[in-house]
Length: 102
Image 1 (cartoon, rainbow, N blue to C red):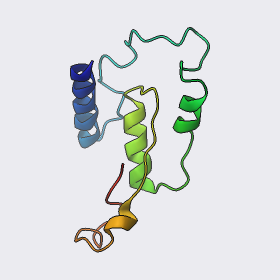
Image 2 (tube, rainbow, N blue to C red):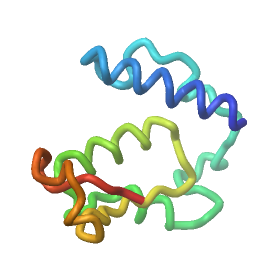
Image 3 (cartoon, rainbow, N blue to C red):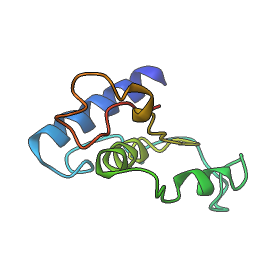
């Protein structure tokens, strides 16, 4: 499973670098054998829907990271911008302030 996720992550990264949409040309996404029983919710209950909801705290880079991670079909996802903890680091000045994520 880990190898499959690594392969899909690499394909998404390459597609993003080429400027293509993340789902174009990426095979294997949606071929998962994990089923939610047709109920539309994961076995974790409503956590998935809550975690996949829009995060208004994220800037443009954080939203792009979250969208690419969603292509991997996670059971839960939460992208947290912790750039404020690294405010003195070089590189912050050349970006829009989004440099570190969990």
